[in-house]
Amino acid sequence: MNGTDGAALEAGDLGRSLRVWRALRRMKQGHAAELLGVSQATVSRWESGHQAPTSPERQALRALMAARLDGAADHALARLVRGSSREAHLICDLTHRLLAASPARERRWRLSARELLGTSMWRFHTEAIARAEAALPALGWYGEAPPEVEVLTGANESREVPIRRGRCRWTRLRLSDGSYARLVETEAAA
Image (cartoon, rainbow, N blue to C red; front, side, top):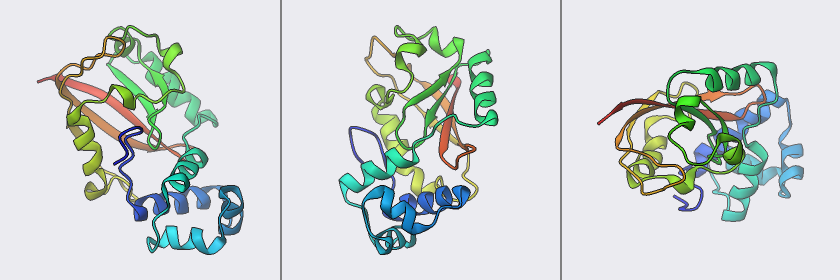
């Protein structure tokens, strides 16, 4: 796992995500290769899991496939999160960038959701969250029908975005452009 962005994707998982992302855009491997500055054969090997992208290539893949709220359904999802009475927030599943937060979640933060939008929330993670993130590939998180995952969070020491010891649920959602977002809902204090 990369400690700066929390990405726990293995080569096959990132390649599988790229294949789905491309299919939803009706994009050929050659075009994806052009966007990424690699050969079509390299994209093919990533998608088949036969070659692992280098660290700079993983960064380029994450930037290319980062969740964006482009479609009407995506904006509706963000509105639902922002209007929820539950403690919830929505992040890009690859980059952990904040996409939306509920008022109940935001009340726990010293920084506003507006200040945090578009920035990675990974810097506020706990060791328990890092362990749960690293376990996602084995749970089928990057497959066709990802399970909801219950996570014991532990507590962090951040003043800006405190995380208290508790339990939350992660749900992986495919957005209209083929990218993935993660809905994070607090379930209960431990």
